[in-house]
Length: 539
Image (cartoon, rainbow, N blue to C red; front, side, top):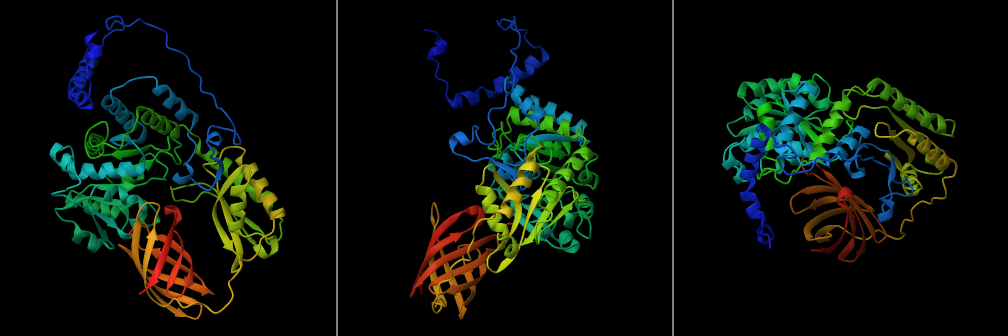
C-alpha cells in the first residue's frame, strides 16, 4: 500500500506545514512550474455558462419553504441587501474554479483597489462591520504577533473614542474587540479624552458628521496632531473618487459591498492607509489571529473587486433617472384615489442610500385600510412585497402612510408594486377595531418580580409600576439596563411599552399580558430580537 495512504494528516500537522506551503508559494512565484514539469497533462479550460433557474413563484428558496419578495423597502441585511450585478456573479463563479494563495490574491486586490478608488490601499472584508472590527484590531495591535494573540485581553491602547452622534448598532465591530468606548459630545471633550490609551477614533458618516463643530474634518485635524488614526464608517454610502472622507483627513474608511455597489452581500471594503489596511488583513483569515472568523473567500473577494470596477463604469445619472421614473409610475398608478397623496422625492444630497423614493399617504377611514394592514396584506400576497415605513393603526391612528425605495429594485418591480398597491386600495378587505376588554381596570401598581423566558435562557427583571385609572407608568429594571414604562390596563389586560437604552442600539419592548390578582403573565415582543414569554409576581 502506498505510504501516502497510511499517512494520518491531522489539522495540527497541516498547520505545521503552512510555513512550508507559504515558502513553496513564494518559490513558485519566482520560478513557476510548467504543467509538464508538474506531471500534469495540459487540457483546454472547460467552458461554463451561468443559468438562472426559476422565478419568484418557483425557485430554490420556495423549494425549501421560503417565500422570496419584491423589495421596495431598502438594502437591509435582514431582507438580503441588494441584488448583485451580473459581472459580480460571473467573477464569483469564475473564481470558484481556481486555487490561489490568499495572501497573494489580497496583495493583487489591494493594488487594484488603490488604482480604482484613489486610496493608498484597500482590502476586501466580510462586510462593513467586519472591516470595523479589523480596523480596530489593526489600530490596537498592528502586526505585533504577541498583541494579536492576547486579544481581547488588551494591555495598552484599549480605548476607542466615538462622538455621541456616531453611536449605532454597528459599532459592535469596535466593542467585540474588547475596547472601551469613550463617548464625547464636544471638541473640548474630544481633546481632553485623547490619552495614551486611545487606539482609534470611530466616526459614523452622516449629516451629523459632515458639518458643524464635530465634523469629520475637524476631528481628523485634532487626531492628526496626536497621531491617532481615524476610522469612518460609510457603509451605505457611494464610494466617490476622490474619496471624500480620506480627503477630509480620515485614515481609514469602510463600505458595505451589498448595498449601492451591488457586490456580494457578505462583502465589504476597507480603504486608506496602506500599513493599517495590511495590518487589518494580517488580523483576518487565513491568519490565526483574533479576526480568524472573518474569512473573506476568493469568491467574495473577487466579486467585491468586480463590483468596485463596475461602480466606476456605471452610468449613475441614467440609473437615477430610471429609478425616478419607477417612483413616478407608482405614484401615477394610485393617483386619484380618495384622500390619497403620493409624493415623489428625487435622490437626496446625503451619499448614504441616495436614490428617489415615493411616500404615499391616505386616510384609512376613507380607504378602509391602515398602513400596517396594507403592509401585512402585501407581505401575505403573491408575489410577496415588502415596502418601507408603514404607519397607521386602528382605531387611534387612522392617518396612514407607506413608502417605496428604488435603488435595490429590478426592472419590472415598479409595475408589480404599483398594481399591488392599487388593488389593495380598491379592494382592501374588512378590518375591525381591536376588541377592548370591558370592566374596571385591574390593579397593577407596585413592585413586581419578573421572569422572562427566552428561546434559550431566562432573564430576571423587576417592574415598578404606578397607575392612574387605566394609565400605567413606571420603570423596567432589566439585568443590565433600566427603561421607562408607558402603558394601559383594560379590564384584566395590560399592555406596556419601553425602550431599553442600549448605547447606540436602543430597542423597543412591547409586553402584553393578563392580570390575575398578584400575578401577571403574557408575551413580550422585542422587534428583531423576537418574542418571549414573561410572568410576574407582585412583591
